[in-house]
Image 1 (spheres, rainbow, N blue to C red):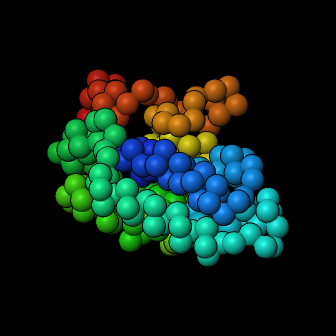
Image 2 (cartoon, rainbow, N blue to C red; image 1 turned 90 degrees about the vertical axis):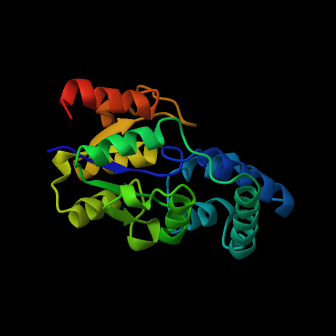
Length: 218
């Protein structure tokens, strides 16, 4: 039995780069220097993890509430004007999995209500048996908790699941949870350092679908 657990931002939706850009706009407005290092460390993680990174980097005076209020406002304005952009092959892959009768979940570091809002914009809730948001677990990616939770709720063993990811934190999380990590690179490239955590790599979700059709006979 093959099941699939998806990350969301940068995998199903082309939103990772939008979130990333807001870090720099807000840092500039608040006069925060050298935002690149913490921004890179936080790709694929939930807010609790990000708070820790930012306090470690900037110290206890980091203006957390103001920073995230501005980030949320900027992202909401973008979505209101442009919608939530899909990644290539998202619907095609999800349709294929649904028609194949496979169990499908989301394990996203975004908060659950954000995940659900994104899915509703494209009538995509119907494709998922389980949705796990970053606010539903104690330890963020790269810890394995969110993938273990998704498998638990699906009622399947991690070894029987692919995990589709774009971030290093997500790939480490999925690998350490015992799933088969599939990297579809977005902002971060495949490299020798992350290679031991990657079971398969594809350029797009369409390529992953074709692999399942051909190699797995799904």
